[in-house]
Image 1: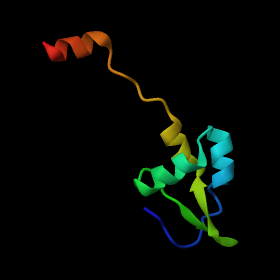
Image 2: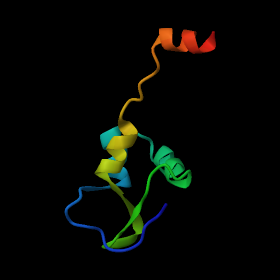
Image 3: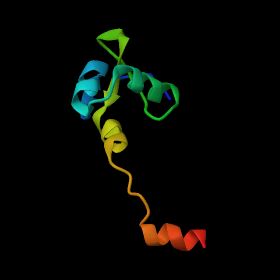
Amino acid sequence: MKENGLVPSHEEWLSQREASKRFRIAPMTLRRRVRRGEIATYENPLDQRSMLFRLSDLEKLARPRLAPHRSETAASAA
């Protein structure tokens, strides 16, 4: 899900190191999620060897997922 082109300036972007620190995610985990297609990376126009992450994409992944209520899971199992 790698996208090429210019990085829009109205977005907030993080390097891999910044994303790892801010979201407490190991760099290897970030790379794994990129390979799985769970998150897009963008080329850094100043350094093509490094990847950038869109802050909004990382925030979506960081949101906790709500588990179904126990009564709902028990009712569906019956």
